[in-house]
Length: 308
Image (tube, rainbow, N blue to C red; front, side, top):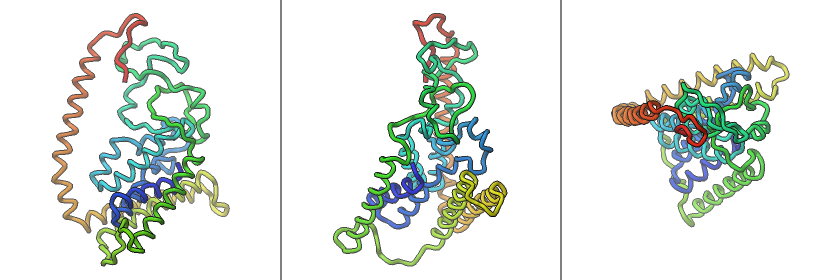
């Protein structure tokens, strides 16, 4: 899905369900965040393809949970982004919802043709099958997996990014958002709160600064990928923009914490409860995995090992 489609879809849903400008802004910015896991400065292009971090590093439940600690509406926007990406095919790599835990499983029981693979005594938990090669061959060039076939860790959908569904969601989101604005402005129904009130600088300054950092990061990434800069060395210019954007985003988070100390304090007070939940999940997972890993692997093809 395109950047503009993600943002407008988040803005539309925030307008329908919340209607407050500050929440709409938060959800819209959150809708842009997951695509920071492209090859925009984190990895070289080769290592980026080999590690397959796009639609994984920031497109997963763990990242959404961590983002929720910062702001639940940012997390909502990121979830809407990830949900739309989950509708795309292997061409854009779908979404790896369970990253990084899905990377702990290294093997599958069946290959991409449905033939049973030899089981590894050291590996007790498996995915069902490897990714289908005829699908991964259609992946866009900068995302195409290299090396041996990987277990099928990703969720794919029926939609090609940038095609009819992408265009329909974008145009529909823009049109419906404008319609909500018109209804609210004419006083027919207050979908969006247009009441003029003093700006909360402690809220808007860090948020808008963070948005600038995200935009600069995307601009730098596009310069690097498409070689749009003609009078500069694209790599040097891109690296400068990447470090600049990273610094701006860090500054925005720090400034937001300084200017909103009460929110930070209330979040810190919630941390023990989050940690208790994390510990519980890990304990349950540990017990289940230990139980299954203690069982011998089946010696014949009529039985299957534990499959995720």
